[in-house]
Image (tube, rainbow, N blue to C red; front, side):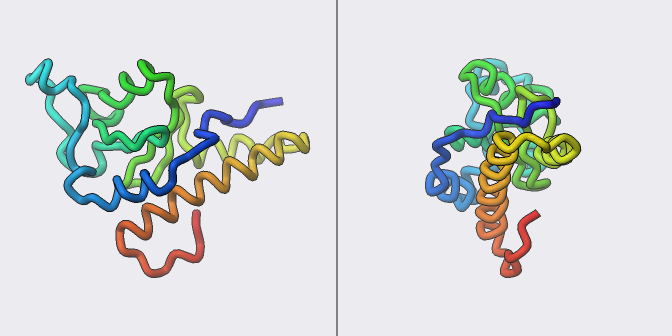
Length: 146
């Protein structure tokens, strides 16, 4: 049996996350010290190249950039989940897959009741994150969370 990604923060600070993603200046700048320590490494230039850590709401360059700031930060702090505000994909560094893959992966093997409960908690977490992103981006049709 495969195991469900259980790396989501159990005590997610939704209000801090909403405050961060609502700050249009904050979400466009990498918070890593890597760029000041090594100016040759270019910072992500748009939302598609930046992600928000779902453990502490830090914004950093994601896997699509040469600096890999978020990946290094998450590894250093033992954090796993980030979200890209452009694609709205949640990435788990521990599982090395995104939330859609995790959901699909799980649904193929969901006979265990305990795992079913964990999956429901995981989906509720993902739904909160996606809903907060949609609201921060001014979407009015937010009834169907993917």
